[in-house]
Image 1 (tube, helix red, strand yellow):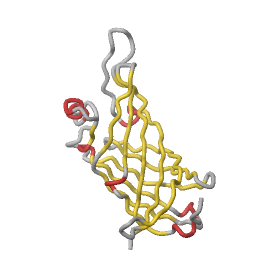
Image 2: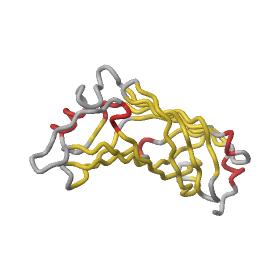
Image 3: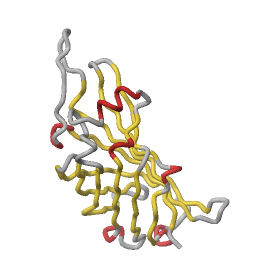
Image 4: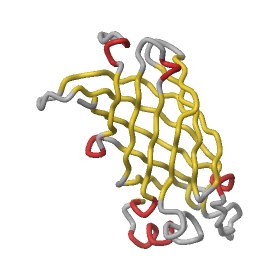
Length: 183
């Protein structure tokens, strides 16, 4: 890693145009459905000298769910799944940040979906830092974790004739983050 972590200390804003907050779930026991949320915001306070003093907050607009299928997205917005009218946001607020290796950071925090808050831990790989052509100082991280959707009150399902269920309980959350240092 060419950039010293201490040089990265600062407050950063997630760049939605260069960030993906995605997910995947098994569908009908035979394939995965992938999707993303298209509207979100977040900040990261990075302390390069003492990563444990770093923090992250993210807010995701539930109605922005996008699986590239309008009918499915409409169903995901209903009370069967995200109930977007009543719960317009999914939020994450870190409670601990730990450096695991030179490039890996473990972020633990409170994830709230449908008014239910549970702790989750996500390992993020530091992908690098760069100054973009517009003079912005950027950092990049990628990470993923799995949650059980029923832990958050997302319990809709349908049994299949051949056995199994329509939608897996396990949901993989995927994060590809580019953030810009605030002036």
